[in-house]
Image (cartoon, rainbow, N blue to C red; front, side, top):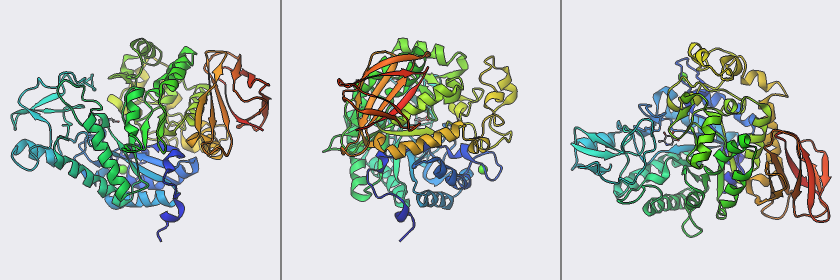
Amino acid sequence: MNKSTITLSSDPEWYRKAVFYEVMVRSFLDTNGDGYGDFRGMIDKLDYLQWLGIDAIWLPPFFQSPLRDGGYDVADYREVLPTYGSTADFDEFLQGAHDRGMRVVIDFVINHTSDQHVWFQESRANPEGPFGDFYVWSDTDKKFENVRIIFTDTETSNWAFDELRGQYYWHRFFSHQPDLNFENLAVHEAVLDIARYWLDKGVDGFRLDAIPYLYVSEGNTGESEPPTHAFIQKLRAMMDREYPGRMLVAEACQQPHEVVDYFGTAETPECHMAFNFPVMPHIFYSLRSESAAGLVSTLESLPEVPSGAAWGVFLRNHDELTLEMVTDEQRAQMYEWYSPDPRMTVNVGIRRRLAPLLDNDRSQLELANALLLSLPGSPFLYYGDEIGMGDDIWLDDRDASRTPMQWDDSANAGFSTAEQDKLYLPVVSTETFGPHAINVASQQNDPSSLLSWTRDMLTLRHRLGVFGTGTMNLVSASDPSVLSFLRSPESGRGDTVLSVFSFSHNTLGVRLSVGRPNVTLLDAVSGQPVGATDDDGHVVLELAARGWHWLVLGP
Ligand code: NOJ
Ligand code: CA
């Protein structure tokens, strides 16, 4: 028997209890000094991830690519980019993760390829050939005019003209990323075969990149069209049949009622998980507005997820902090709060990391992370946020928040120091965020560091158990700055936890209608009792500025 079957949990719903960690290979650890992270580096740092308490690693694309979109421009789906290492290195990394009880989810970018992909090169050169219909070609660029442009900073049309073929091709992202034509069933087969290739290697799941955009039809928006859902059902059915226990997580930045469709139904399941795009920006909105109202109404607007499904919750990822899911007024306000330098803005969002966004302020970082770890679903951490790494807004596009992981105080951490110093905001400085100030080595041995705090919180989350799979009920609070909810075990056995978060910048007293009379409340972090509910199930709590609690309900 191979070692991995011994240490990996056999639970087919493992993703509902997992803490995920997103890391780009290029950014983690460079072991051969060429300036790019590599799979040898990933292997070296598996012990670190296990120590931190990570259950699953999400790797953005690491395939052959011209890297004009961080690897989301795939030129060969089966080849590892040589800069990152060999296929054997990937295999060793995957085995190493499994041996430590960690799963690996990889990106699956099927909406589009790079224009360097051989399919596209064949398609342009030979319209009658086997790849002639692999992309969406047209004699006119006046089709699908209802479809919005996503990369508003770089693109003016979703069509680009190809001189060789003498036709336009469709692209939802950069013009060097032609969209695949899912009307062509040969594309389905090609995509399913690539999935099988990586599943045969043993990967535990896929993040479905840009999944709403597979199909486009005249008069419609090109987002979440019915045949797109039908294709996801087909992919899911193949996986359930041939690879049970593997999972799909949808990247669908859509409104609450639309994003839930990516879970599918009991009869026609789609993804096991979907990123919770609606909730994310409201966390940042609440932190500045001192009001929990937007979060409460967003949580209320989210339909129940089907049995076995789970949200993927996150604060930051490798993209801009997208503001697509808030109103125009809220967006304008958030740009004012979080993007004081126009350089920090990209497309419809903000290209900054968590710690600089939150003023490098421990109480804000702890509040945001404690909320993340107790919301319904499974949290996705973004590499470097566990140490409070900064960004480099002098880098292009979203590379601003993809700088090298700061393992120790060595100088090379992707900061263009001279340029950085020109920045007028003192808070984004190499002094505050450079590797001398922020690194794993110094934080690992410091019990009061953000890294130690994060690790302790992951341990606590695992111990409490309820946050992954438990149900959620909002608790009404007398103060609008306070968000509170109960998480109760799905099975009825185990601890129920009352989570309370104050977004106020001042101390306050709040009355919570918990609905459970005469239960004691035990602070899960300190282990100390903090009070009890009265005969009517109410409790009054004093909360510090940006204070929060995870309170275990007693008998
Ligand atoms: C979403 C990815 O997260 C982003 O980085 C990429 O640019 C687009 N999809 C296009 O693949
Ligand atoms: Ca390297």
